[in-house]
Amino acid sequence: MAGGRVYGGSNISLLLQNEGISRSSESLDNFLISSSSSTFAGSRSMVNFSDVHGVNLPEKSFFRSFDHEENGDDDFDEYFRQPEKKRRLTTDQVEFLERNFEVENKLEPERKIQLAKDLGLQPRQVAIWFQNRRARWKTKQLEKDYDALKASYNSLKINYENLLKEKEKLKTEVLTLTNQQLLKEKEKKNSESTEPNEQFHTQSQRLISNAVSEEKPSDASVVVCKQEDLSSANSDVVDIDSPHYTDGVHSTLLMEPANSSHVFEADQSDLSQDEEDNFSRSLVPPVYNFPKLEDDVPSNPPANSCNYEFLAEDQPVWFWSY
DNA sequence: TCGGTCAACTGGTGTG
DNA sequence: CACACCAGTTGACCGA
Image 1: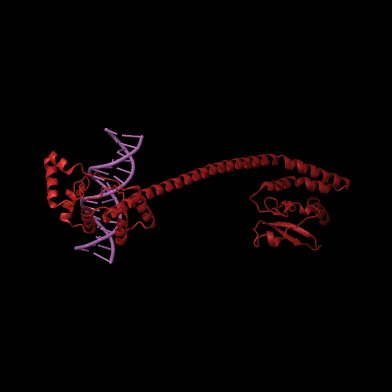
Image 2 (image 1 turned 180 degrees about the vertical axis):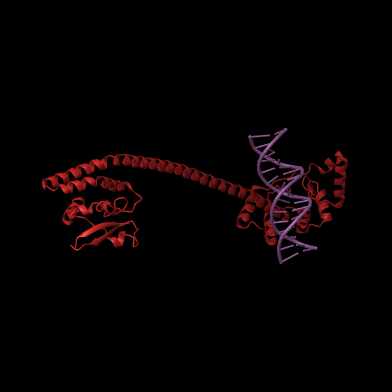
């Protein structure tokens, strides 16, 4: 229960408050409220606490009023007439206060007194108005902050959901591509088990026919017996894990060490130097771009690696070591 | 009649 | 201790 209410034309509680006065400037303001009249032109504010008759209530009146409240004697109503009811500040007063509030929402004592003078209000009223105004401003600010946070949250939420969607999309894409890749590899493996033989068969037939035309039966036998090795060498094409050299155009499969090391070795004894050279030339493309070793070959190649040297005839020769 | 708004009050706290 | 400020509360007022 708020004590010390002063409106309703009864100055009792206000006077009581001021009697007991422990409340400093506010009490002083209350005192001023009770002891002075508003001078603001056209003010309908209830703050004119000179009594309704325009006369400051003497202590006697205070007690009489108190008695009246206690006893509920209707005669006092006639005597005091209907008390002035609580009034709001006028639009002009509020506007003036608002403008001042915008300048500075705190109130120094001098400013308070000046404002009170200008508005015909009591300094305490001005102080109270500023207090309430600050409270309203704070509430509004909280609402604004809440709205801003809410908007920010919604924006982030939308952003997050979009990212989730994109992530799912990319996931699906990766899955599709992976499946396609696996399928391709499977198909390649399947085709490798048949195709290389066919390729080699054509090539070997050509070699055989050449050999036959040159009437050198030993060549044919050598080539035929290499069929397995060559097919296994071709299988290295899809060995994507193995390091291999490329000049950007030719895949350097012959340099691929894995499983292809013995192609030229096993039956080396069966070939003369010339025959061997011919055979090598028939398989190695005539114009061969050797990779720049210093660029593409690790300084310490693996043990099972391909080596490149010049033989006595100054012809480049690849050989495998393991 | 009811709910929102506002002026005013209360009690507590911080500061010089 | 005086003073200012704040959060919470009260009751008058007012429009729907």
